Amino acid sequence: MTDDVVLALTTTGTVKVWTLMGQENRSQEPLYENESKQIRCLNALSMTCCAYNQRTVLIICSKYWQIYDAGDFSVLCSVNSPRGERWLGGEFLAADRVVIWSDEGKGYMYKLPANTIPDTKDFHSKAIESDIPFLYCTLAVPADKPLSCPPAMRYDVVSRARYIVRGDSEGKVVIWNIPEITNGQLAQFKQEDFSNPPGMPPTVSTSLVKAWLEMKPPPVGILDQLDTGDLPGVRLTASIYLPQQSRLVVGREDGSIIIVPATQTVMLQLLHGRHQQYDDTKSPNLVSGGVDFAVCLWDLYSGNLLHRFCVHAGEITQLLVPPNNSSPRILKCVCSVASDHSVTLLSLTERKCVVLASRHLFPVVTIKWRPLDDFMIIGCSDGTVYVWQMETAAASAGEVGLANPAVHFFRGLRHRNLSAIRHATQRGLHQLQQLHHSEHHDGSDQQKTGAFPLMIQGLRTNPKDPESHILVFDIEGLIVQLLSEEYSAMSPGTLEAQGLINQAEYQKVAALTQSASPDAHKKIAVNKSDHPCSIVVRVPDSVAGSIPGAFRYSVNQWVWNLVITQPGENNSRDYLNKVATVTV
Image (cartoon, rainbow, N blue to C red; front, side, top):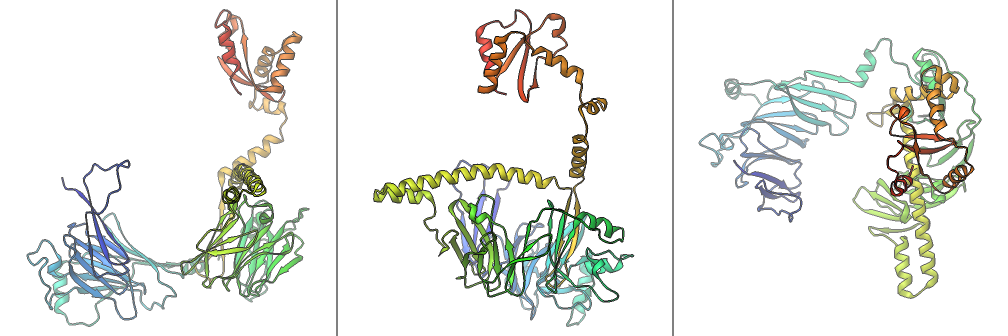
């Protein structure tokens, strides 16, 4: 039995090797590499071991790919990328063949030289000029236009059939079925003198645009009723679904915002109908941002512009909501990100900018929150991290300030400042209370969100496309909601007629808890006001068999835990005390 070997390659070109003996466990000390070696391979994209011989390794870099001997990591062969292209990845097709794909969405199939094949006598020998990797086929889409960004490509094996799958930013999916080419066919290819190897078109080629065009009748749009005549409609650029209000808010290319009742719109549009009026007395707000550098606050139902925030110097690219466990002031804010690398917290109640974070030198790519420490953490495309204190708008690049109450507490101890110690303690207790409240509040929100029977998700393959919509129906949530509405409208008599409850058994159990003794009523009242308790009920042998040994029973909106015993059974005071301490 051979030992397992783990290989790792750093971005600086250092190969590290671990040998696993099969006796490793979590409790032992960390395993350090057994050996390491520096190779000429900077910023490698992928490393693949050959599954056919476990001896050769394929390493892909953007400008070249190489085959290495796994024994000593010496280079066996190397091929540069075509002009104007960069390698993205690759895989072994066999012990002597590889397929490599580039950022132009093309695949290249190579026959490896003899010095890279362990089963030959020339393995690991010095490469000769005539024996180099032979390009015998290319995978390309005929008349394919240049891609706006590198596609996603991968190699898959399904039922012994080998495929190369490509997906690009235009919503197009291309699949090549890699054929089996014999060594005799390869020998014929080598004898032919051709500068460009033969190309193989894809087996399957489809896209979202093609799928839409092939649908008869064409799919209806969510706002098709606003189109007039033969003029094309205004493209949709953004949308958000508000499940609690059952509203779909759609932003369009001309700057207009359309608000429609989601359920009625979906229902009528699927039936090729028109919208209906939908009246509601509530007036929530809507926040939008656009290319005019402004963030607008709207009344969701009346459509009136309530306020315009003009604090950015670039196009608004993103709108975020702070987490639920933030401070009360921050909870009433919305976070906006602009193309001028600035981030703001805009108070919707105070109608002013609370925080303006505008010191970032590079575009903002991510925002994280630490509400208990009053931190907003901003990550930029160059790898820098800015930590902003939300209440005071203080910033530091890559380090954390003094917003944590524990830091203020120890600082007060060091300076013997009782006022600072008291203030830090009060603030820490307040944050703990907020955390406890937010845990319960977040759970209820998640439970409520999961119960919505309809969700509408926007879909765009790239920023230039108009936004489409995917309707997600939760059948289980729909059934639960319908049953809840139906049961809430039923009376107890109707529930019993439907067999959902048994009133006779209910009254039989209720009779067991009735007592004519005034002292018993006083004790029950004391127990009800002080703490939940359990009751021991003694019944004759004739009915004991028909009553369960223990069950829960509701009387006067609080719960009893009934433990049924027979006369003479467990009469000790110790048993009664144990039963009485059961918490319900």
